[in-house]
Image 1 (cartoon, one colour):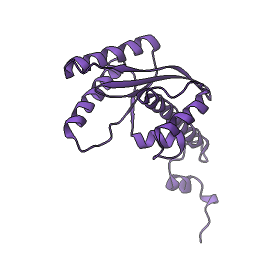
Image 2 (cartoon, one colour; image 1 turned 180 degrees about the horizontal axis):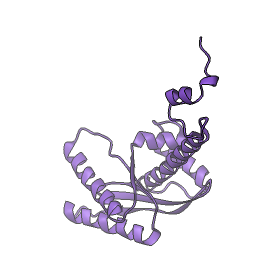
Image 3 (tube, helix red, strand yellow; image 1 turned 120 degrees about the horizontal axis):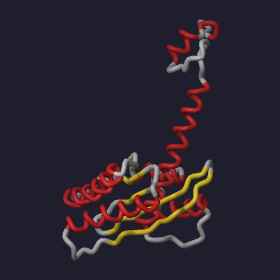
Image 4 (cartoon, one colour; image 1 turned 90 degrees about the horizontal axis):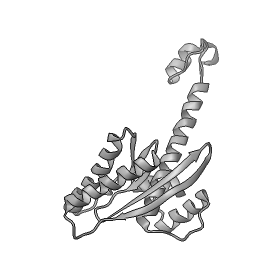
Length: 190
């Protein structure tokens, strides 16, 4: 589950990962009425995230980290929205990961400075989506979910490679010093 937090619009995207295949379950936005006070909007965020968790029972929760702007009040409000979403996931026992906007873009397109349209085009290709670009908050949240999938896939591959690096006595090797100690015959002096 990916979330793009916001104080007036919160995007969400849910994907299904089966082996090496990723598909869209649902994406959308929660529009928060500006007529409600900030605390009522936070309550609506909590309610929507809880509803999505109950409905889809995600295994992971990924959220976009707020980018640092000059307006401190906006950052504070955005941080509260993010905190409510994170707390809701944690209360449900779901592990939380956070990614910067640059990391998300880099993970999806290979370029951390990509435009939103480029990110969407890549998501369309990856997930075989036909529709035109939805609200940016929804596509951003979907990108966060896919970024999280890619990060887990990468860390799984790295762990797999570490498991294959075995010393003489069948122990995992952790670093060059351990490799040299466990494999003196494989080391040549210069």
